[in-house]
Image 1 (tube, rainbow, N blue to C red):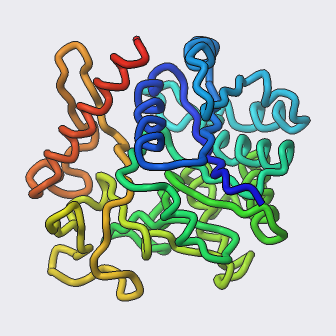
Image 2 (cartoon, helix red, strand yellow):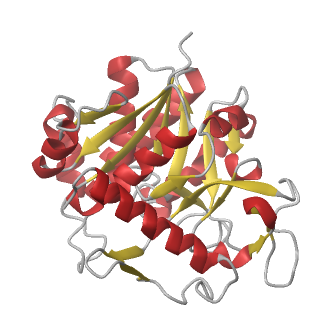
Length: 314
């Protein structure tokens, strides 16, 4: 059986530097991987495909159009705006499940690991695969002490990284998620369609068996702006998760973890000034004031600048 790890991401030109920063972090720490990159416009496809990197495979939107469900996906989602200010739509969110399913169904890969393009790895991605054990589905929570399944519209789980094995359970779950995104009028949409593709993840353990779902953050340390305030930073880039009262967030997880990856959602780089900002300041807590977080963001900015220069990205 092949040991190649099939990792999936997507972006347009606005996140092309982030995407190549993800690629660089995988290449630095991991072996035997292929990054399957869906380019959301011709500008992104032309640039990335011209690089000729052996473990980077680029796909265009025309490739996806081969799928008989593509037009239905587009018609049912493109007119449903997420945020009028940024011009995006539910169509962009739905592509994570659609592209993952496209790859598994067309190429019969043994698994797919979807990863948002603004994630950076600090250790071998193999740690994610090791954490899966024999389970078919892998997801992460937001790990925010204020979020649970009854109080949040954005979803208890985060779609930034998600794993499906190509077995009976994993493929059925991926097909379910994909179909929910294709058909925006599905039977679960009223309750679980409030945040594009994300809140549907709450149905996975109920519909496909809790015994088949691995909550990866219990074994794989990771952070994001919505949970950085719950970090207690230790030496050697290790963390303990605690709530503001000092309590460990999840008794089922390891008390100390290496930070395997971080998700830099809402990070706003200014490449001309070599500076950065954060477009959701204060919503999840005092991000910048928390010890260690500024260094994490500054390090990410340096990684972005390095990738931008290396690949001559605009």
